Image (cartoon, rainbow, N blue to C red):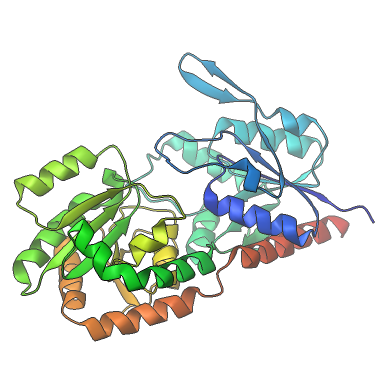
Length: 377
């Protein structure tokens, strides 16, 4: 029997998706190919190394017109995929989806919840989602938040399927464990003292970093022990954040810069608590990375599927976005209780243990099987 041809069309080859696509290719359940609009994206510093990819791929042709980059979904006009799963928030995806439907391919959209603080909603965009979601053959999402978001725009519940996010758990767990014997020396080298709170991600207003600095200021002034804040990442607001630290006299704030996947476990190992002050992440995979490194989590509620990952009072705390007082209170609580931090961190590691790329590949295979079975009926 001929193996079905499955295409997943993403915006860029992010490290997380490459891991999952490699797992899909290794399993060999169907003929798989990945399409990407771009190799890199503005504001992202990830390394891209195609030599490590085990799957077929192609980049879409693009043209720059009046300062805008137009992507042309020409591969859709070539050999027809049996199933095309794609994003939906760019014109190229919508044109490609329409062409695939016309050619008889089954189609799916990858959908995650979005938040008003990050997304400017217009009547036209809302109309497009309400028109699209009931007409696609499948919605692939991460969890309950994504499902509710898709249903809000008319997606039938029987066409919504789950493929929870995953990370390279072994890499983060093993790497952080291997780095711990050198932890104190590395902390001293960076100037980290006392309880270390870590944030990993873009240095950008939408991540809530101004709230984090306010909360850290309160925790630093109110606590009897030293605390430090380790910021790992780059972004457009680094200079502003540095200036704010200087103006408010914040001590022990270390800007470590962007770190690739290979280095990240070593930085998680320096920390005692992971803080995610976001104002509207569709998910936030850095939370999962920190969990794999046995860290307790303090996150805002403005992150998709966060309640599936952070159990209040068990492996961390969830606070409202932009509430610096609530965030500071939880930071102080964990700074003053090492036993609680240890217990929460151990539970984080247990909760994330099975969330591997191979698990995602298995979930995705089941979704494709269900889509194809509906075709057969």
